[in-house]
Image (cartoon, rainbow, N blue to C red; front, side, top):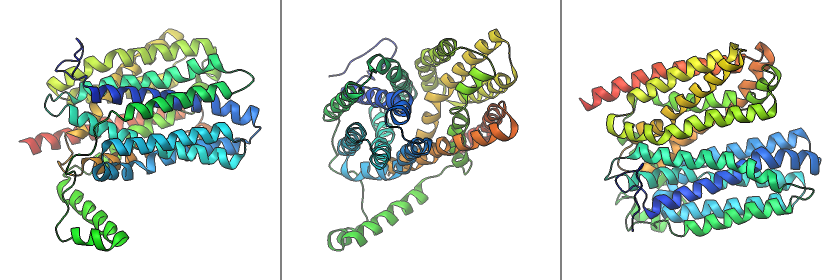
Length: 417
């Protein structure tokens, strides 16, 4: 059975795609609620843990999420789409259970690290799932737009909704989050399982896999890497571009609230409306941009997105006029509506036919590392050069990405010719 929608043509909304959408929304809902609304206050105010413990927990969550994306992509090819997703979700359920039921620093930190490990398979699975359901219809960008809506919606709704349930006790809050993860595990049961033959193993390696256990697995890993190196024909510029794309966001994440409150003098309520305005422009633009990118290609949307983002973020750093700030935030939202669905679409067109899961995991690990390093650099820039520095740094990174993408586009055109 397949569903259709006016904005999403060619029967995109298959049962598999709907399951992925629900899973991403609920998992991002849980992560957004935990990271933004619950853990900072719960760990600092209720458990009286140090700022070091809070920072360590958050860092390990991000590190676990990024480091284990490559192994998750490799596992998808070996044990299947559904089992890999369910293993990750079960680990995430256990992680939130540890956070909810324990009150010592060691267990809380462990729970946050496991939460990152548990959510690591999500994006490799999503990319593989979308590649599968859009293979014939060739509407990957439209699908990415719909998925990005679920992620942004979950991340935004989590802190807002969960704050209504926060009181003297956090028990009810944790029960809500655990219920969401339990529902996600049930939904994952409806994902497609492993195909009869997922990976082609060299005949010379197959006997080793049966006889020599770990040594054979190591040989299989070496063969996988060898196959990737032989079949993956991408520009060397893609790798720094993957890192810089999230690094630019990582520069802004830890300082945006502080900048708006201290430098622009906005109240929390005004800042919330500002975020809703920028995020609303992004969400409204995702599906139209995705549909147009599927029809006309990603080149000019990424050109526009990177250049517009660079100019808008740079002006945001030096502007103090409230009307201008509102306009710049909406332009930043528009730039990300151009970037989010088209960036992954461009990458998807570069992947080889074999080992797609492994390559997606590798690319997502490189890309996610920018979100780990960006906040560290951001704090140093703020302390050493002043509050506008992280924003000017992000603007420069976006400008660099604009020129890198020009080089990538020319190479892609040359390869097609």
